[in-house]
Length: 225
Ligand code: CTP
Ligand code: CA
Image (cartoon, rainbow, N blue to C red):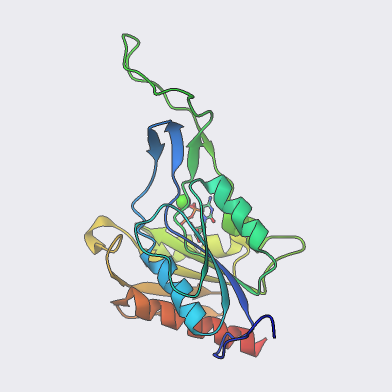
């Protein structure tokens, strides 16, 4: 056959995954960014491909390598990420693991902003589109299973539950990213799975193991429906 289906618990399933930060340009040499490494989202893409899924990974600027067996679309900004995700639909599953920049500057300067007697420039910020909410509330192309993340420094469960409802997600992978956890950029993750059915606490695990468990959870949910 032209399209070979690889075996595994996600054989024949199509998954779109976002990963990494976005960069929002201020001028030709400066941007707004965040500390996301992309390690967790990329690990989920690798695990889903290993489980037999057809994976489209929409990756912001990261230094981690493209996972094997995955179609990777490299983007810079939140708006580019949204367009790439929409282009990847329809899909059975969406996993939105990217740390999308919440704001961008209203208008990017064409030339490098220079210092001068007027003092520091004021940056006027506008909100970026919410990719998870766009997918989770899509009128025609909503994937059967929509998974989001919630990076919080306080009130983890309350904030994650609010995001589940607001964005139309089925599951939220919640993690505490307060500086003392050292999670951001590291190789391990401690997450709690927030669903309408209840909350699961997972132990501290390598990001690859968290990815395997998320893929098993996805396969289980797709199988049950
Ligand atoms: N997300 C997204 N698009 C955005 C912002 C967030 O797709 N513009 C997704 C993230 O990929 C993640 C989830 O929404 O799956 C939650 O992201 P988070 O930053 O925790 O939530 P926000 O809604 O941006 O709220 P806040 O940052 O104020 O906590
Ligand atoms: Ca945010």
